[in-house]
Amino acid sequence: MTTPSDAGREAGRLLVGPFNRVEGDLEVALEIAGDRVRSAQVNATMYRGFEQILQGKAPHDALVYVPRICGICSVSQSVAAARALADLGGLVMPPNGQHATNLILATENLADHLTHFYLFFMPDFARPVYADRPWHAEAVNRFAPDRGVQVRAATAARQRWLTLLGTLGGKWPHTQSVEPGGSTRPIDAAERVRLLARVREFRAFLERELLATPLEAFTALDSEAALWDWHAQAPMAGDLRFFLSLVPDLGLQALGPGPGRYLSYGAYAQPDGGFALARGLWRAASQALEVLNPRGITEDATHAWLADARTPLHPLSGLTRPEPDKPGAYTWNKAPRLAGEVVETGAIARQLASGHPLVRDAVARHGGTVFTRVLARVLELARLVPMMEDWLRALRPGEAFCVPAELPDEGHGVGLSEAARGALGHWLVVRQGRLANYQIVAPTSWNFSPRDAGGTPGALEQALVDAPVRPGEKTPVAVQHIVRSFDPCMVCTVH
Image 1 (tube, rainbow, N blue to C red):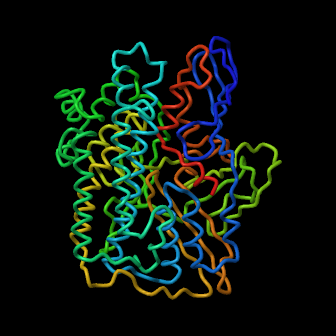
Image 2: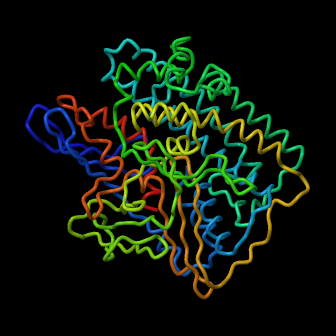
Image 3: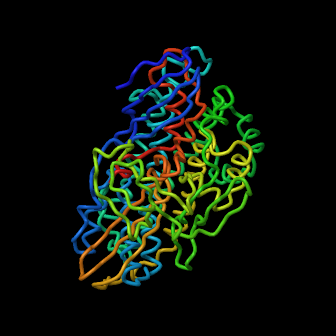
């Protein structure tokens, strides 16, 4: 599982993996110099082949196959596929269909954010390595796996939250109500009332347990200084404030800096053609949002166990052919690039692109780090719940939720969406009524990408450089914090 490291020697190699509390298989090879990580190679160790499975299928069949890529973010795959098919057919969802699809996607995304904070990320602070810290006993009480009081409370809240998808989509995971023309599950007036009650129940959990403050009061914080003033009012009230208490003690504000470029495809498309959370590329160096050009997306397979093209390919002409014995390869993940550059994606990118002042200020001060990634994810929880209440109120029972999907026998389509973990894209080509090519670039494909042909490391590979390694650590705790701050979904990466 791991190989021992002697942090006192001049240089060494440490193989870390598989990671627990991560969706799918992940392995990280670290080069250690002294007590720091000198370089990293991130390995998605599994191959699944959904892009091959889809070859030759009827285009509409993609909606049956792609949700099976993942059991925790299956709706995200459905939405991206539905958008690609809608693009192929020139379809536009009616407003009800748009709102219902957004509600389905937001329900899953917020469940993922809640799961990440309470079940994946915070339990690391209950580890014995922190037993000498004054806050450790409280971390164990709140976040110890299986028995922490807040872990148990969040698990119950998540279970009740996901029941929304029974009404909105019929079932979860692998919901089948999302279509290119909208949602096939219309919501009547009585169901809307019950859904609003369940959303408000989730709001109450967030306001009572996670934030210990009204959602609107938290989302109104407009700077990092305001955040710390808010924290100082009651440092142990609510689980986010508890996390903030750990940040300066462990240096989490400086741990795991990313590439400084943040990609969002735009989240929750609106009937007016805009997005609830804007799209674009946020560039930290210039503090500016650049217009997104999806034509600049390419995939480089130099260091993947996949066949190489002569140059990196745009996904519409992408190639996915396994070569497990390929020299120089170390992962099943390709290296996506935007105009040749490494980018980071996720809640942090969405909050930067949509202009939230708290995250923009925190990232301007610290960059994309463990602290700012977690902060952005919690902020998104607080921002999206009121949006969901608005979308439910905007539904018009009795009006159309879905239009028929007439798909051509020839053409191509692109479906760009935002999963919990970031930018998700589906690209498809149809010839003679069948899928001739289907390529998927998942959020973790961006964040956990390998080196490209120029030797440039991916976002996580860069973020791990200079991470501290304690003497004798087999699985460095700092490395775990950095990896989990990205909330990887490896099964989507290797689809």
